[in-house]
Image (cartoon, rainbow, N blue to C red; front, side, top):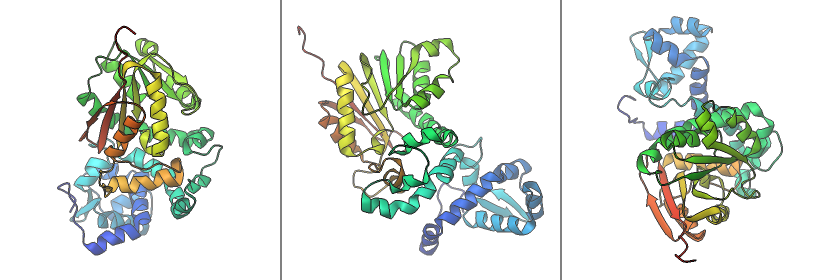
Length: 355
């Protein structure tokens, strides 16, 4: 049963879920496509005939879907009625505790097709799976510029995930001493807008691709936020960062690149900061032992096979070493941030007085 937050399966069933993972995913995705979980919740449960009528299919295909979703513990059967499991209520309803719809969209429409090239990506040490995404460029982020529909799917998921993870950092880190921040790769500005709302004296510059910053700027209606949250288009490696910042947000960037390239980027951040300024490196992480979590292990192939061809889910130790190698000598680590995130803060040493 999936009612307590824990799911117990036999070794054989666990292996079946791995072998038939594509099928399990498609059962889940199809349930969402037919809005089945929402329909069941609204009706308080339905029998086979009612489900078939509600989603507009014959009873035989409806039976196949219901059998599959029940077997993977997303639905339960009470008498003749199918109802959502507790897990589905938490994760698959739009008003649930943590709706996973945007994540499932990006997996279905962008990521899954590329992972058939994981082995070849390993052999070539590059993102061979990028061949499944049309456009120009050597990374997923560049190619998405040519496919606005997929770019929206991508940033809808990134914005949703970032908003949830960012809430953790706002509860743990005090930005009251910051006056001007740069949000590196800030995407649609979700984090910057929330930070500016929380700290009225703070101005934030979102640094990202031109196509992303153009769309993001159009979302801001509040005049005060329009004044304090600005957008600076540029290439992460080629374009100089704006100067004069006392805070740089390096959020959900570290996993994209190799450790060497992360150190290069963090050195660029170090040079752009004012003396005494801080660079906040905040990311989803694996454990330091390199054995988990399961999420870290399952997400990492995406970075090799598709995103950039060189990244992965790194450990807190990896993050801290890159921050130090970039020139930061005052470094703090905040672990257990929630959502398997770690924050590493590097401070640029202030210039000695009198200089």
